Length: 79
Image (cartoon, rainbow, N blue to C red):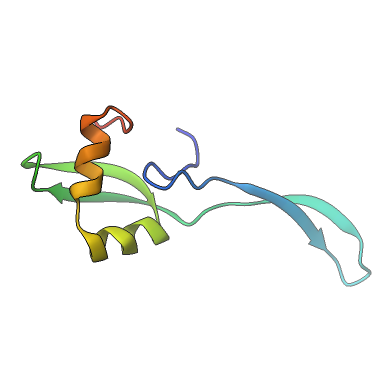
């Protein structure tokens, strides 16, 4: 699977590592992804998703209704 959040769509971004001598080399900044098992009341089951830390905080604040809608619209594939 790709390193991409299933809810927010956050993925890797590219930038430069800069040494003390100010030499630049290309590098990749990866999102803070966590595998999270969430109970979705609307679907009456657990769902395992790969989420960014930001998405986990948003779900904790707003609830799982948004996830249930994305799953029903087939925008998120769930095992």
